[in-house]
Image 1 (cartoon, rainbow over the protein chains, first blue to last red):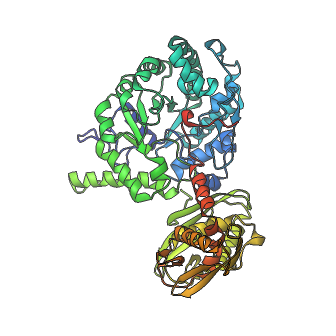
Image 2: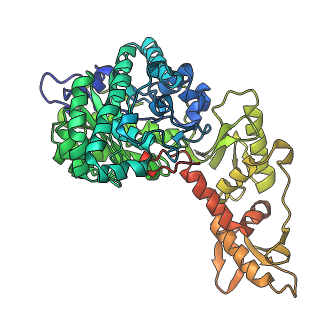
Length: 365
Length: 216
């Protein structure tokens, strides 16, 4: 975070939400720390509020945009993110999808993989016209039309490692990476084209930044795996997709943060298993961190006081963008989510009071 | 302008009500001058949603002995003034499982028990204490009475007495016959209640692809 102390520091409340997010992603000065949602803050109560429920809100552009807008209009976040799921591309590639109902996430039936080798990797010619792709593109267009430059619109394009889990199955893909690393790299290189195509289409539709979930997670693969298979590939994506990219990897990832920070990606959306201060020390100012409010224990099961404590830990560590660590549980209480921006605004008001005593502050309520 | 409301602390959620178009129903704790009150609320604008909320509130009042707060007619509370929140949350979820026609009425304090192979009875001892008893001569009865007592202690955060293992007591020292009746079935089947909780907690949480079970 760069909340500067010289004349170039924006006055609190001066920046729009979009300006705030984009500045933080670029490492520039901000009037306050943006509250950012690179994955999903959809809840069943918000679905009721705007009459846009899962699974329809994952497949219908109008409902998708309506639900995504609540992140800004109801919760006070500085970004909106209409791509709630991680399976849109996999559906368009032909994976078998279990769409589930209102209160659960759709998943790929990974027990029925569609590909076996690198030769199978093929992006259908009508990939970008598949309904589960066009709904995302249309939702971004709708959000841009509704909000203009007011709020940051974040899209999502899945990285090749996650696509590998979906199309080859988790176990076969991981075994392939052990048995034949070269072939695995070939698969990743070919699947990268899918990531690029969907990402560029979202830029054309109006996305300001893109989340890049690529689940080389701490519990399944080591930091060396990230270095060997993904570091260079992610560096290439920075050149191929010309807007800020926010890498998302769940779990304990401090063993790969140094590699991630060297890719040129704009930001890393990091998990609560990594302490904010420890993580900031590793990445320094090479990449912006976003996160890392715990989902299952804090946002889902505890109250605003505990949420505030985690927000403060991030602010005190200088984390540039604050938000949940991952897609929040659909049953999360709204008061916990609203507490994130409230705490951020309170913290900044206190910082200003400490430094000047009478500085203007952005309204907290 | 936001449309969400300041409803207090949400303490329980029925994420999909099968008896009313899968709307979500929340139970919120609010602090008033009269003490703690609880609100049932849905954000759904479905035409039948407000009627469903009223039915669930009726279920809490009739089924567990709660009262509507005089100066806050939307809020309900236990007459003793205590929260009994764990029991209330469970009761709320149980009421939400029922269609409107089956909501309401006090549940009996005598229930058949398959494992005891007899009927079990909840007997009020006064001062908020209750004894679970089985007919004399029922061989499996005493053990089951102790197990059901432990079930009540767990589900309703009641106090138990080591010297009388079939007795449980509300900390408030007041009678809660209706609540005991409402929770009787669950206290007999406490393990399934716990499993239900675990299932509900895991549902709706997005796992990383490597941790997902590809369902057949």
